[in-house]
Image (cartoon, rainbow, N blue to C red; front, side, top):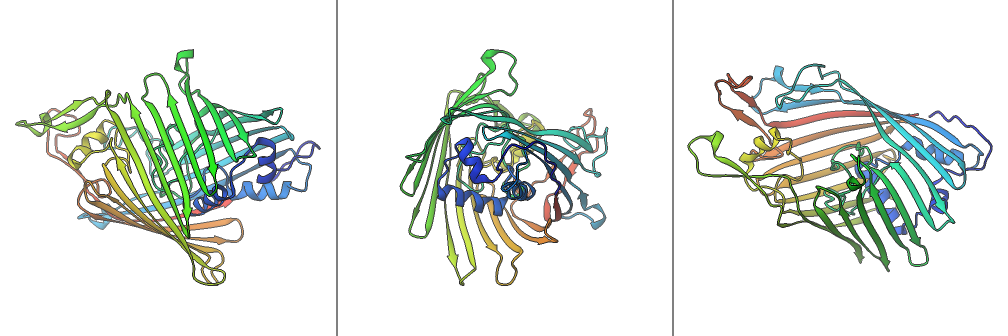
Length: 456
């Protein structure tokens, strides 16, 4: 970790100090839930290096922190019925560099840039969907400015991280983000949306109110979207209400509740949307597979998505515990017919974890068991009940040499051909470039991977 400091104003970078300055009034149960989720599924807002830098700055007068993270990995994918020599390999690598500036106790500016590199990609070539391969990309992950007005209204402007919803695997209420979070990644790799966010906390009640202007793809004033969110605390029950409206996008309304009963934590998260312009597809009677599918609209319908889940932490020794959880997801925008998936892939509408109409998932989290103080184990089971495809994933994470983290995982694909066991067989089609000989993508059987993360 490298820390470069400039200036002499007193700036405390610890989370509690930032909460005091910028009005983060999350409850203790919210904070515990967030910390547990970050440990299990990764947290895209802060890296270990940033948290360590905050601890260092707690007792210093530094106003600028520079640090980052290097993430390198290798994936080995075994396909069903393929020859071992044809098993695929890819190597996702990235480097994050961030600058965190706090010239005084009232202003903070943050920038995070990302370089992605995958040597298995060949520049200029295309994949089976016709998308161009790019081996090296540069992204601006975050760029935001935060300040407050009379310590009552807190303003954040720019590309900033945001995550709504309390569920582990599915977050239908997280609709301000431009993309959907992959619940099985080591950490959240999405870049933040461009927002102007106003936050008004009511600290005496533990309530928070947000007004947001979405600024992505804005060229005229009519392109600006608006979101409103309220978070309410009643004892050990947390409730949030959210809405988003934007030109050419559906109206969205969301409800989120989490509560504890004895040792069990329960969560429910639901979203309804109206005016969705995305085309849907269905099969019709026809003489040819290429002409037996039609598109239709559901723009006039109210479409529901909801998640219900529960988890429990069991203490099995004085210092050790295990967390177990389960979730069910109902998705009104999904499909029952898995044979439509290839078409969705060709149309750019193949969105994992949101293709089917019914899902179930469970997880197990074992942190620092016994004398393994730097290790954790995560087991995940996800099933698409609509097409009867499933995956089981096991992660082992260990901290090596203070700053180096290794994550080893294995994913096994089971059940019928479908979302989690996706394969495509296209017969020869004369006159269509690239399909004269047909095409076949064999379904996966086992994915193996290793990831190394270094914070600096």
